[in-house]
Image (cartoon, rainbow, N blue to C red; front, top):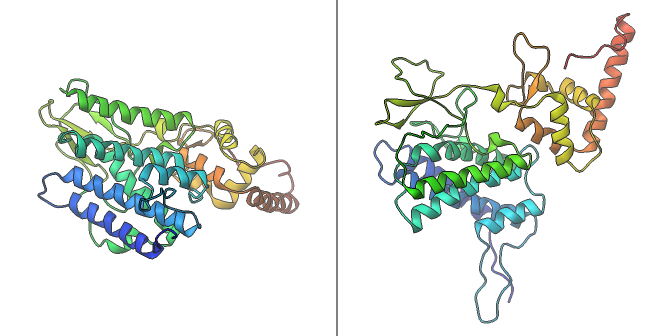
Length: 345
């Protein structure tokens, strides 16, 4: 007897329902056990979405059947491993980074369910939870053309299908706060996941939103600022969302290409490939990919830029490079004295 039939449509629909339920729970004005329930539903949404991805590619979502036992569907960790192992992550989405994000939430879920009430970790888990929703939306649009935002008509709290206007920075742990051993171990596990992803050259922006903690009272904020209470008893500590390109866009063009070439399987990319792609697709105008100080001479690049460039095939680079060469020749012909000039890096 073969494995049970599993509807891809049902998996996708149930996955979206679980994610929407998570957002609804999180955004309720009054809700106990809020973080724990939201994370459980988010993790379930990902497991269903990954299984739908495997099924659509013709892969099994069951473990080998044992004699006398029923078929058992794979768990989340195995689903993440199989999607990565079969190269099923969509182009432009850094699979290892998204995996690290999901595993961070899985760690939180396991502790909440099996060990203790994870009360007090809401401010710690929020950056991972918000980024997870954004990752999920991108994943479902790319894989199934299902946009989570189509089912959401309002936002009450920051957890939603669209990110705040500016880049969000990661948090610095309050060393003065009293933490039980389990909480400290949880934070260390989050750090381990991020360290492993960074060492692998993953896009850290896919793991967690980033916070800058200020030990000062805030009397007035603009609409561009996100204020989140972290420790009401720690001297009025609050969290302000700021943009620090040193963290979000750490790579020069040379470092960017080095990272990209270690991640992709095609030919080694050169500066000309990068110039051509930037010209064709306006990469330097995309703040998620590039940043340049008003007094700076060159752009710096983000982890998302690494993922994007690494996701493109050699054929794409060859086509864009040919177009760029034609553009440069035409410009040289029409404007004497421009030979050899290229767009500034």
